[in-house]
Length: 610
Image 1 (cartoon, one colour):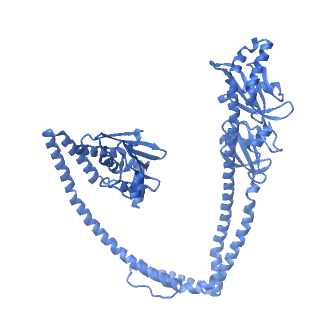
Image 2 (spheres, helix red, strand yellow; image 1 turned 90 degrees about the vertical axis):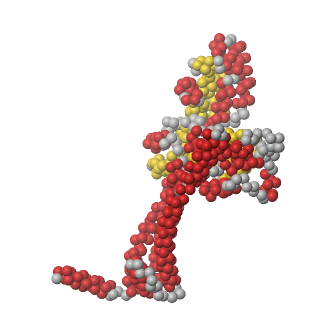
Image 3 (spheres, rainbow, N blue to C red; image 1 turned 45 degrees about the vertical axis):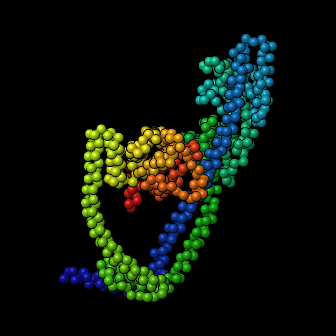
């Protein structure tokens, strides 16, 4: 009784709900339902697209800025390298090496003569570089003995350069330097050691570079975007070079936490930070030669300027799409309601296994064609069910036949082993060895079903094959195998790819004078590829003439063409086989394969099965 009462209550509630909805027209109901179900997804898609577009634009600009600064850092490194090369020639200059140790003991005449010689030897090198302002040579205590330049510098700055050279890695101390006139310079300081005793310090050499010319030659034309700024700082954040008037040289520019993040990430970074009270994209790249950083600042307002205009267009398009779809809702409703109801009913019948009654309906519209397509799918489903049932039965029959067929290989191996022992008992070691190799080859061919085997097993099969061929050809050939690394023996290769190539050398490389043919199999790692080389010193052939005849000699049961096609099918066009030959010089065959381990092979096999 209680259950009946609940059922009646639900029935009344269900009857009231359609009555309330039917107070509205079908058109209004369809438009209302469409707007409710579509407005939120469309709005979500619009906001999501806007966010993704913003992220995409900023990400691409960030990547472009990073790539530009990375290339700029390389250019700066090349620029700095020429100065280091110049200092090296100064350090090892014989006149410099002779003058510095004896300078304090020289007379004024000797000093004048020695410095004149140094000037004559260095002047051509120094003035070949346009932005080089000074070249100074100092004694160990900081005294200047040679100054080929145009400006002077504070004494304490020169002593600071001397002290920095003693602690800098690689004997190259790069830093910012301001002249007595207030000019911005870049200084390179290096210690001069005695050629015969690298622990004996003779003095220092200082190169002073005009920062203005340096920046013009390296990055003056670099533009990351509207409002962007580019400058170079040292490892402590002090500005070494800049073309921006609002970035002062020789001082810390950006916020401390911003540069700290640049230093922590070793320069290869892009992130947002607050600089001069504005949110900016900070991009940097490290200059290896000096340990400096090229830093680019790009305002975020520039990055999102195009996104705002795009957002308005997306909003307009979404609103127009909603309006148009609402106007078409009534038309669509009348054409799809009844066919959908029939399709749902038919789908329920199919889900219960009723596949014999087709769905009626021959209308020429899309719903009519969908009905015909579903009928065809049901017919195909019946056929597939029958096919699966037949396949399962055929699989059981095949398994039974395979079980029966296993008797034949075992009988063959037992027979070969019996013949081998008979040959050994009768003293025929060559025949016994050949039977052993033949047994192993047949075992690897018949029982081992793996497509890929370790290179060590492939070489073992090749050696067994050579043993068999020596029964027929005697000592007419010599075979050697070697790998560049022991690890290569464990990489997987397709089965029986070496035997056809070696057989070609045995059959066709022999010379008219009966000379023994040498055959070598070598392997090495070529990046992420395995390169196998099979070469012989036989009579060779003309590759061009063979191609013109379009003849492919059958080299073995498998054939070289077959090996090439197997590799291409398994691994793709980058891999395969290439033959090079020269008459009276020999033939070389190169096989290029991917590096595959056992676990990778299992993954590849499972992928092919799927």
